[in-house]
Length: 405
Image (cartoon, rainbow, N blue to C red; front, side, top):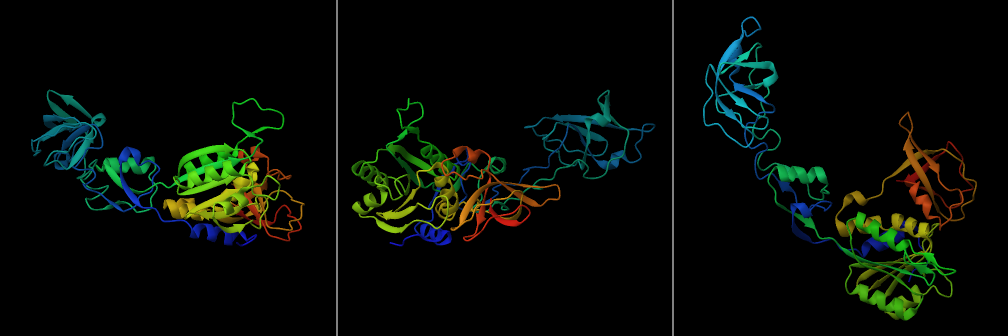
């Protein structure tokens, strides 16, 4: 076992134990939020025919040469086509076909005039302006040709992507399989929301925060629960979870107190203890072990401490097991907007709020100068972490700092 490790090394050790996901084919309605396992090629042209972009009349542009209010062109209307319909009549000189938006342009026509620019008199359309060839004309395949790559492998299928796939007739797509996780919280003091607390009890929030965060990252959360500080209960729950989930996250029981039992439990189960502790504050109390090939990440029981270590430690691992590259954390330099007077004997992650000012510069404000590891409401105000180096004597307004967005 390695004792306290640097953040970057902890990330690598956890990522190393993750497995790349397999693939499965799912129906398009179930693919929302999933990650493509292969490139998708268009099976048809899009649009699949020459299409009218508006309500109007299909005709030959040459028939409008010299047309004006004083000398309009008059063309016989020989057919009407609605969206979903088709005209088998060919457009030749002197005739027109009325079209609705989205309907196929009949053979022979090379332009469409919008209905508002015409009037109908005794079965003839009156046109008082010249048109050019291919005006208001959407060509077959102008968006996508059959065989064109619609979406690349590793794309996340959000609403727009699903709509494009539906638009070219794709009914099912190959996506990466979703990994499954179990989330467990330990602590005699914890109770579920909705239960009346006894003296000394608090509502357990970690279970909900971590489970929902995993779902946002594309993970199936199989089982969650609050466990008492009891070795047998914790050991039984972890062993059962390892038989069903691809990995496990626990919160609580990782410090050095009398009831911090996770390390002892994992040893009793025969797990490999990879490291214990990360050199960062808050959230230094982390235990990483592997049980039967399943990674077990045990985080602090303090709400914000567990959130910090989740966001700083797990993205490379989650990216690897889901195939979702968007989970990678962005880092950048930003101008600090307020002072922070505390010394940092160890590396520190300060919760901050990042935005861009009128000049487009990245700026950041420290949220909650007390930086209490149990202050959950700070999460509602922050959108980044400020990475403070070990040995810092404080930060001053106006200096450049590194942030993790």
